[in-house]
Image (cartoon, rainbow, N blue to C red; front, side, top):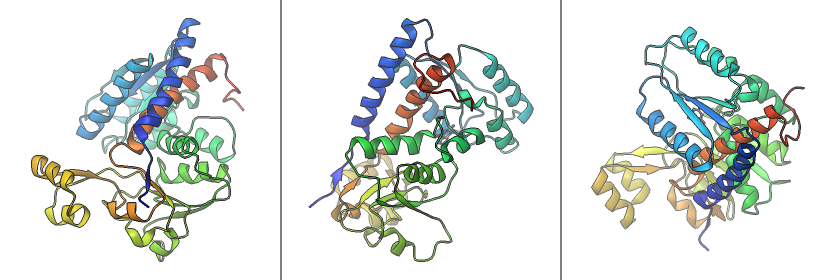
Length: 313
Ligand code: GUN
């Protein structure tokens, strides 16, 4: 039986609609949520991501503003910008798009964001709140994956979950969220022995490695749920044909554009898995939807309007 396709666009639309309803209620109370996005320099991929984030704010009814310091910005200049945004009451969320230029001390900049406005969930305070199961702000991509699993009726408690990749942005917080939801979690990385064997244990396999089509059939147990966080551009014809030989639609795209977007999961796993996320249209749309949800959550927590609990511990 072919795998069930988990539709990220559909679930993202549900999350956006909920965030929009909350944003309207906050605006009616005179406290429209606001997000400041900081895009440093001119990384083309970051420019595309940031455009998507700002557009989504408009659709959801969140005030947004974009700050675009130049490529040669110093750590001190960025610290000053963040300090200004921390002080402004109408700004509920601050997002510093990564990667930052090489001369900038990223860790210093990220720790300068007020944890209550840290809608990316990257501040060590939020990392600690997540790991100790206190209310806070969790990173958008893994939080979106949890929403996708939950809303698709995939059972997490008691499941064997394997996360491939240990980044601060996806792998580590993903593992923590799954653990908090009572999965048995294994985190794999480049030094893991017998990676296919470890992955085959998974009921839920999350691939966040950044290598096109690396997760092949021999990594996947029959019926497993496979979540593909990868977003890789493949332009090499040999690599293209390893992934998509015989796929007419993809061949047409490759002919027309000279490249295709591919996740970390090989398309052949659709023959084995129980459920998969497509690329594009899987995890990607959820990341931005969760940014909207986190901005509304930050507004509620800071302004004390319907917040469940405060970030202050
Ligand atoms: N760069 C790649 N992913 C992300 C993300 O989720 N947040 C930020 N701020 N930068 C990123």
